[in-house]
Length: 414
Ligand code: NIG
Ligand code: FE
Image 1 (tube, rainbow, N blue to C red):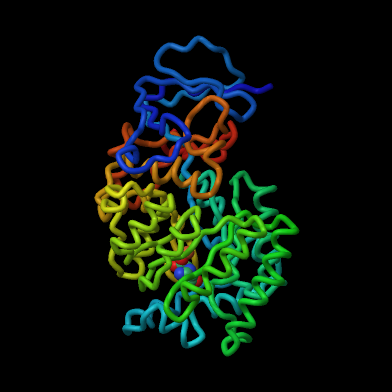
Image 2: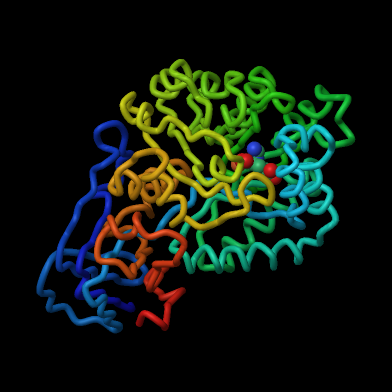
C-alpha cells in the first residue's frame, strides 16, 4: 500500500459529487480552503480542511496553491498522420473549411497521411501529444478514429488508442468515427460506404472491444441526418454509445437527431438553434462544446448560456485535430469558456471535469475529488479559480498527479 498526502492546499475546487451538472447546477463547485487530500494506492481516500495528522509515504506541500481534479478532454482526434499547415494560406485566401474538404483536401488529406503511416509512427506521434496534454493538466481524454475510413486503417488507429491507454499515464476512451467523411474510393457510392460501416466495420470494432462510442460527422456534404441516424443506431445495436458532430457549420438536424436517439453527447453545436437546444434538453444529451474550434475557424460561438438556461449540461473538449483545431490546451478552452460563452469559472470547471467525464462514460472514476475516485489532480500555479480562467497563454499547471503519481512537475515554480 502506498499513500500520498497533499497538504497546505490554499483552495480545493471540485464538483462536490459525480452527478451531471446541468442548468442551475452547472455552477455547483465546492470550494474548500486550507485543504488536504489523502490518497492511497492511486485513489482518493479522504479530503478535508485544515490540520491533518495522517502520516503518508509521500507528502506534497501545495504551498497555498489551487488544486482541482485532473482535467478531462471529452473530444479529440488524437491519432493522425501529418499536419495541414498548408491550409492556413488557403484559409487566408478565403477558402472555407467544407470547400477544402470537397476539393479532396482537409480530412481527406489527413486520411492519405494516416493510411501511409505505420502503427508505430502514429503511436509515437500521439504519445508526444499525450505528454504535452498531461503537462497542461489533462489526465483523461477521449480519442477518435476517423482518418482511416477503411477497416484496416480505422482498426490501426483504434489499436493505437488501446495501446496508449495501456502504456501511457493518460486514460483514453476510444470512439469509432468511420463516418468522418466519404473516402475517395466511395465518393460516388455513399450507400456502399454506409453499408461497409454498418455491416463490416461496426461489427468488427464491437466484437474486438476497440471502441466504446460511435460518432458521425453530420454536416452539409458529409453525412445527412438520415445517414447519421442509420449509422448511430447500428452502432447502438452493437453496444457502441452514440455521439454526434452536430451543427458545426450548418444546422442540418444533427442536434435534433441527437435528442431523438438519446445520444450521450452532441459535439460542437456552433450554430445550434432553439429547436436544437430543445431537442438536446428533452433527450438528456450533453452538449460537448469546443470553443477553440470556433476561434480557429473564425466562426461564431455556441450559445452556451441558452443551453444552460434550457437545462442542457455543458462539457468541454479541445477537438485537437490537424485541421479545424490544432490545439490541445485545456487551459485555453477554459479561457474561451469564460470569454466567449460567458460562463463563470465554476461552470467552466464542471464543463472541463465532471461533465466531460460524464460525456465519455467516466464520471464514476474521474472528474471530481471524492473518496474512492482516482487520485487525478492538478496543483495549479494559481491561488483561485478566477486566476486560472483569467490568465491566458501560459501553462499554469504546477504539478499534475495521475493515479497518485506525479507525471508532470514545473521545476521553475517548485
Ligand atoms: O471536429 N468536423 C469534423 N471533424 C473535426 C475536424 C477534423 C479535421 O479537419 O481533420 C472537427 O472539427
Ligand atoms: Fe471533432
